[in-house]
Amino acid sequence: MVTLGLVWWLIKGSKLKVLDRPNFRSLHATPVTRTGGLGMLPGILISWAFLPAALPLPIWVGVSLLAAVSFVDDILTLPVLWRLLTHSAVAAWFAAVLLADAHGWLIATVATVAIVWTINLYNFMDGSDGLAGGMTLIGFGCYGLAAWLVGNETFAILNFCIVAAAAAFLLFNFHPARIFMGDVGAIPLGFLAAAFGILGWINGLWLLWLPLLIFSPFVADASVTLVKRCLSKEKVWQPHREHYYQRLVLSGFGHYNTALLGYVLMLAVGASALWAVGQDESIQLGIGTAWCGIYLAMMLAFDLHWGRRNSG
Image 1: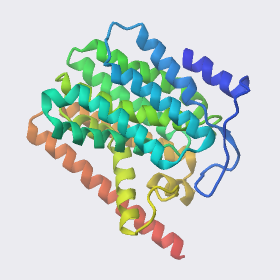
Image 2: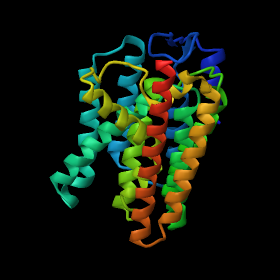
Image 3: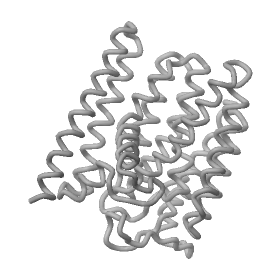
Image 4: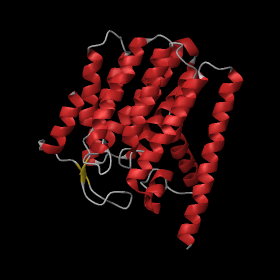
């Protein structure tokens, strides 16, 4: 309810107009306000305050700091280095506090890199109406269900609070979007996707493959696109329209159908991940391998279609 009221106010009544103006990277044709994260995050944090769970301090401070820096970036466009330093500092603090003593500095370092990448890939994938909001709803919904199924109701509710905020935001963000979440929303949510995945592993709720598989629609698109741009010797830090979801929209599929296709894929991946939790390790490995094959086939098929479309 907090998110619903705040997002409505940000669209209708707020004098704070931070607009996402169309540019060469954009998939929209008219300016749209990008302060949706200012509606989502208070809804999440206020609801968490009513729960008995004692979330680690790096979560509270990390979300707040990332939101503050990202909001400034939405307004002023900060240098890439400044943003990466903030992302790295938050990720390193989280890993040092929660992983270094129990699991060693090597694991903590790998976790830091993984968190920084998840923060940024979430932001990369926030470029089409309803897509990142849907991933938030479905991804954290799967986290919540997984925690609920093993009896940790408090951690489940923490995730369901994020789901509720995402659902309220999607009412205004689904095509045609009246508001975007902006970096102020996407960056903290990317951090939470990685941090909650690691917290679930630390607390023995799931193995590390589960969060990776649940968020694999975003991981696969962003990671493969980054690799392709590196191989092409492009400046990977510069905005572009080479993600598969962006090309899908540009190919004529549109925002509406791209979002629906994304939801079907996210739900299928999430359902298979939840089902695999109670299965033998060989079956879990098979599920992950199968999805790698599915993603590869989908990408190759679309690359072929895109090449024919552009050559014609």
